[in-house]
Length: 149
Length: 149
DNA sequence: GTTTAACTGTTCAACTGTTTAACTATTAAC
DNA sequence: GTTAATAGTTAAACAGTTGAACAGTTAAAC
Image (cartoon, rainbow over all chains, first blue to last red; front, side, top):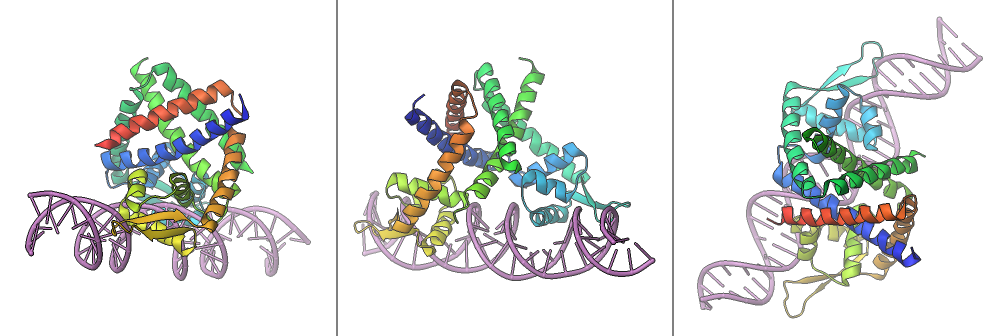
């Protein structure tokens, strides 16, 4: 592959990744709605899968400062979606869990997103989309390494 | 492919797309810096490639309301990166172009991003990454259709 | 055992990006 | 010539972010 070919690939990647990111976000916003922002949905998703977690953990996973997590959690806490519980052994730590309401809202939104993504995926050849996701996951790992230090 | 397989694929896609999005953003932020946010960089990129453009055009491309564009352009205009020029024939229209400073800043940042993306891409098999980008572009088109109406 | 250091989380000010709704100015339609 | 549509702006309100300073808690050093 020539230098020019690689340059073109890089150009195409930069353009398409930005475009897909924006379009996917607005598709979710328009078709899901659900009173949850994207970030809020993914926060609920993470806490739901983890069962419970801490602010520091979220800050690490989402790669933002802890104060950003505090602000986000507070907004969801005000809406009654998330519970804060202090650890009795180490009283610095606050565990975050979903409330009933938070869980319901999450499950509903998750189902809609699932259907949306499935309808997108079904428009592709199965082998193609499978390969795509595998490469995407490799990229995720490479990015983890690059970000690590 | 079974229903379960599809469900798993959907799960994996949702997880990996969110993860890559966050990691890529923070990698760019940490390694590029350059006083430009992601959105600002892509705005400069679009105007640079178009030569000149209007707020309405940017609103359409980025899929946000025009007032969001006004705010963003104003911030960059205050930094001396963008010029506003009224159309003499249709005085409602304002053309946006890069200033010298805006262009310099853009070119510098673009070069760094290019190198960054190239270093990522080079860690993949060439056929694999080429196929990946092609599928990514297909997905972009599918999203355009889905968002269209 | 007390002091010091490290850690968890919060608050506050400042910023970017976003939407909605009301508005100005200009052009097009009839 | 009045009415519609169009291009862009303004202002209020919100989500998400950083950075710096802070409180409270635990661990380490001595």
